[in-house]
Image (cartoon, rainbow, N blue to C red):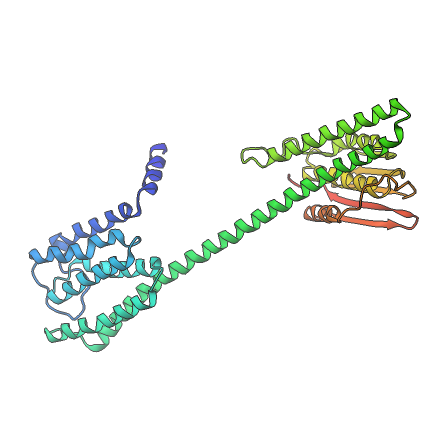
Length: 385
């Protein structure tokens, strides 16, 4: 099996002419067999002529050009048509005359330019052939010539259909590739937004808060250490994202999960945001992408809390069920906005909604009556990563 596979791969790597040549040679050899003499296509019903030396030229004209039927389809069709005309006029009717429909199918399938001109010229050339056959004693009736012409037209039509099918398949693959690239760009953009926005927001808030701690060296040192830790975490997450872009990388390896929520909450607390975190239940072993999306929901909600309600009490509640994970992140909006970073573009929440809905869940982000906001998500568990 290994040798056969290698042989097949080597054969596919060969030039197209080398791959098409064996068929023409086989047809030529079969045409030389006495038992198959007179078994070819007949137009005009002329008597079969005995095999002689000129028949070799006719066979060569009809068979050998098949080697270039895909590379130079017009050359192949012209030479095969010439050999076919000689075959009919001399009455050889060799098996090689069956090469004409093959050449027509190949031309219809592979000819890219001047297709209509080629069809017109071949059709016009058929008329002198029919007239010449009639003058040398052919007994074919006019309707016979018409039927044969329609058969040749059918061969061309089959080639044209193959060409259109191939073009449609190539167009479909191109659209699939474009859609895949667009989806991948969207996924990468979401990941960059989640990683960069959260960490940079925390660093900005911590750095601005450090301005007011110059008189308290211990607290200033702790704040600057938190900025450093956040920056290192951001670098680590960005490196992980770059690793995901490698073709041989396991996309599930190192993916943030709900189990890292404690680290995320602690990091937000160190940025000066009071966060109350509660969990119910235990994550299911088959949670899959649900854990990853849960992590992103909490991350984006805490990022918005740092941005728009810095210092406000924030409550994170995560409940793990057998079939779904429920997330609720709320803030009362009573904190100071003096150190909050500029407002976002809304891409984060829109991206979260798409993530959750892609898993068949529900997502909402609403303002509360007392100022603040609440983010809720219901994420079906067991979705494959």
